[in-house]
Image 1 (tube, rainbow, N blue to C red):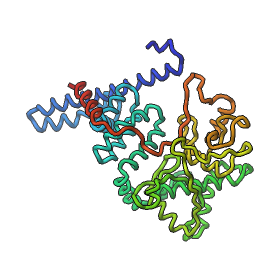
Image 2 (cartoon, helix red, strand yellow):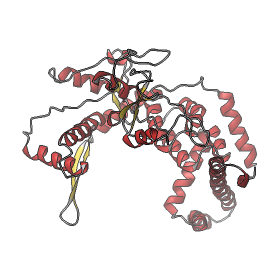
Image 3 (cartoon, rainbow, N blue to C red):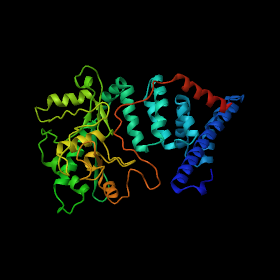
Image 4 (cartoon, rainbow, N blue to C red):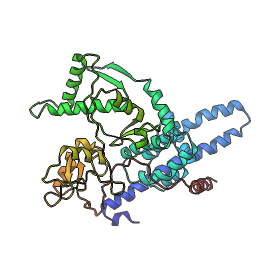
Length: 404
């Protein structure tokens, strides 16, 4: 295809794919050179000479590609892991369907998964998602994948990791310091939510930035509250399967925006020990249309309960690639009011920036290039056909044939 004769968005897509193919070719060349040199070194008679040349092999590759030895080791490890454990994903990389950034994220997930059948399932499903979503969206999807596919092992890791919760203070320059807290995700989310809400409530007449307000509130709470006061006032939405909610099986509670997940037992413990401080909504979703609260309201502005339900359903701003949490967005009418009704079917969350772009006809269902961007809800479930061992094996044979 002559990229100079096509429209700009298509040209950008063609160049991006070519860039990913070139990146994959460079990674493949690094592995090919390493493998060939390793075979040559193994044939040497002297063990001392073998050790010496092996030590210099990665350095030689690093010098050729302009990376440090540590970066080169890391890149080769990523390439080896994906090529061996997810061959279909590797072939997609070689074809330019995904880039090195996404491959590294997939490799990290493969490293966390412990079962061969989990690698197989990831290899079958991840490329279709990765090639049409941003790296941030892919990382959230991969986190959900791990907690869904290997829930039992993920629960063990979460329980072990919670034992390492801590707070550290690091003093910096110019009279400023950092406070870093390693906390369970639902607790950190509740703290962030409360800080944002209270900072906003201070009003537009406060000349401090939102970040400054949050910092001052954080300092005030920690230096004036009693140490025994652990009440957290925040509105946090999580998804729990019905059997996990009842405690009949172990599982995870996932954030509505997909940014974190914690063992369901932690949430259930919070429910049972809150002394009535927690107020819980149960929201039912239509299993076919995925609509919530499908009641039409009179007037332009949605009631608070519908706004919360919309934020929970969609999780994030519905503009393509935007990860702004839905509870910080506006409830926008897809079809403008009054022609469009005020209902769950016609409302979606848009952050203020994308809401403004839509209002000025910059952001539309069909972008100026003619590309259609469908709105979709957050994927809480890992969908796809059952893993195909045949496709996985075929991809491995294709890679082996290309190396021979």
